[in-house]
View 1: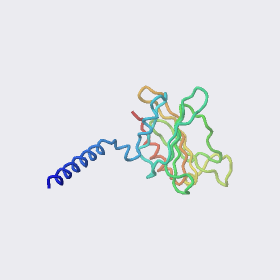
View 2: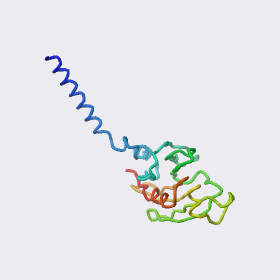
View 3: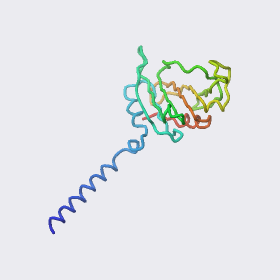
View 4: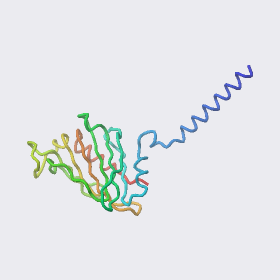
Amino acid sequence: MMTRRVRLVSLLCSLTAVMALVATVPAHAATGGPGKFQQAQVGLTYTVYAPSTTAGLKRTSFALEGCGGALDEFITANFGQQTSGKAWIGLNEFEKYCIDGPDGVGPAATVTVKGAKATIMGACAGGKSTCASATRASVVKSGYTTVTLPGANGLKSTDIEVYTTGLTVAQIRAFLQGLHPVK
């Protein structure tokens, strides 16, 4: 009887310790939150922005890539699956843009994000490689957005590129407005 009691007490103590450990795990670690974005900020001279809203899409990748020259690495993160034919967001953050945007898109809408003008572009009609404008509906097929967000915490401003499929202008606006500097 004593042995069972000791085992039960030991088991309860172990369970309590595990529960206490789980309670101390940061919320972002459990939810896929900004942890990787915060880690990336270390050593970069531009402000890293983390999304607080992603149209319900989970982050599927995160990486730092080389820009070449004396520029800082850039961040690339994906939300959803680009090849799934469903909604997808591809986010790039740069000290200075160092990769070209896509062909076949034209301006469809502009929005203001943190005082900066963001141009949301959509697919050109008829699959043309260039166009003076695109429709808001074409953004759902293929969206591309650029904006330069202000620096924070003594760091430089950030050039942002957002590639999308399956998202409306309103959803892209919400994603952009949900970007916030990490601390």
